Amino acid sequence: IERSSSQPTSLAVGDFDNDTRLDVVIADNSTNTIRILFGSGYGSFTHEISYSTDTDSHPCPVVVSDINDDALLDIIVANSGTNNVGLFLGNGNGTFQNQRTYFTGIHSRPNSVAVLDFNNDTFLDIAVANYDSSNIQIFLGNGNGSFSDDLIFNTGYRSYPYSLTVGDVNNDNLTDIIATNDGYGNVDVIMKTCSN
Image 1 (tube, rainbow, N blue to C red):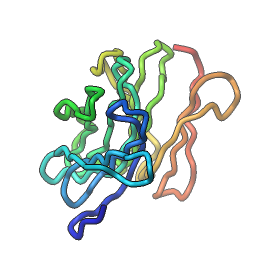
Image 2: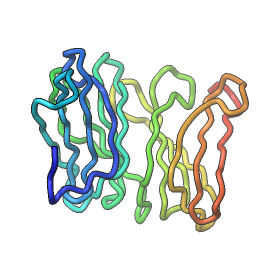
Image 3: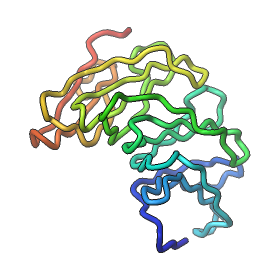
Image 4: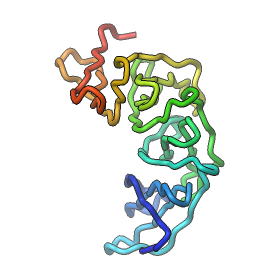
């Protein structure tokens, strides 16, 4: 599917309509939307729908996970232009609820997102790399699509964290956060030191 006005910046896959065929979600920076392409199962797409991420939001990274623990896939996107994380809760039939947004701070410019259970309460949390405010922010999930609190980890003055991922880098069965710092030209690891 091709569009001359489109500027796709990120994509993720998942079965959004529960037909056992993989679908694709694309963050489209120029149209301020996420676009969902529904897979035919034969390497093509049957149709597409789109959802607004708001005017001048400039969505960049998009990830897929079940944030509210209802066995249906949800979509999480970082909106760098409007300084928030957008959450689209899935209905399981290929449609999604309207975007819920979570503020990342004035002039924060969120640039990357990842999903993990950071505080080991069995609820999924969202980690965000905020480029302009040089920090990693973690929204602690309540398990129902809402968040009770957030944690901030500074990555250093003008470090400009650009991308992040999660994993157990020191083999202690605790999930750590790994981020690239554009300003320092290095990789930063936020080690989790306890199970809660």
